[in-house]
Image 1 (spheres, rainbow, N blue to C red):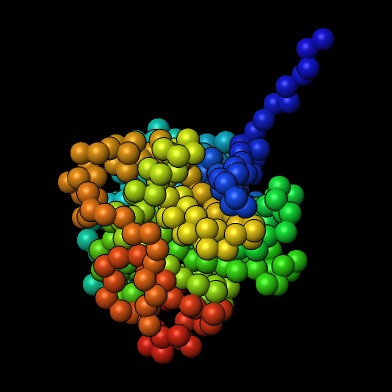
Image 2 (cartoon, rainbow, N blue to C red):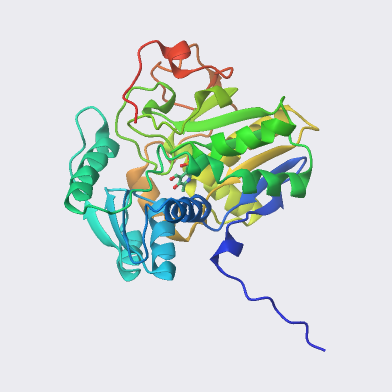
Length: 347
Ligand SMILES: Cc1ncc(COP(=O)(O)O)c(C=O)c1O
């Protein structure tokens, strides 16, 4: 007798595969993490009457959120306009176009808010010209963090009680949403956010960055700073090297933000034996085959790629100090204003 295979739809790909990485460390490997918040936001928009059948979606994104929206737009018959920037690489641009999305690429950064703010300003122009179109607004739409209840439930099902959650922070949705739900059951959960140098999210001065997906030039409203116990900043070279480690040691071919989470989670897990740690790995590595996984590109584009790796972070006395290597700071679940006083631009 043949056992019938259950047909699978895109929703089945929203749940991560929980991979043991030695000791009590687990990697939550997503095919494309942003499918979950994107589907949830669109569903809620339809329920609220903000998105009609055949309607137009406009969003600012240079990465996986754009891809998730494009996949869902094809399946549900929406039109999609994406405002992106340099981080929308050639392959991703091609994929978005093949999925029927319209692209508008911003070439110049905003003098204060960098590319992120420049993209948002351009998006406002498009929204004015297309009345009735829907803007998911992943940076401040509360449905983004809310959608991660499903992820928190999946973590608990797979590994039981959790002591520490580690992940990168971009819009803030994944880490803050998951942390909020997990803390309902585990109030002592340690939450560690991973950012990169020159990102204003946790107080670094804004300057060009080499890695997309984490950090930013403006602080999204969905970053709830009070969720974080500790913040780490990694330079691009450590992030790339760690993505290679994840592949070389565990056979997991994941994107650079997964590498960033892995680096910090591995260190915390080694320093806290017996504690259960979950690290969020948001996407697979295929999109980065010509960059993160290409030696020639790494040598020409990533300062310090051939340098020595750090075994552990350096503790810094303030998040605003000049950073050149892996740094950590005890955030202690405080507001941004409590830590910094002087606030960077916020959306
Ligand atoms: C590849 C990748 N990793 C991590 C993140 C950060 O996730 P979040 O926006 O939920 O903070 C993003 C955000 O766009 C991303 O594209």
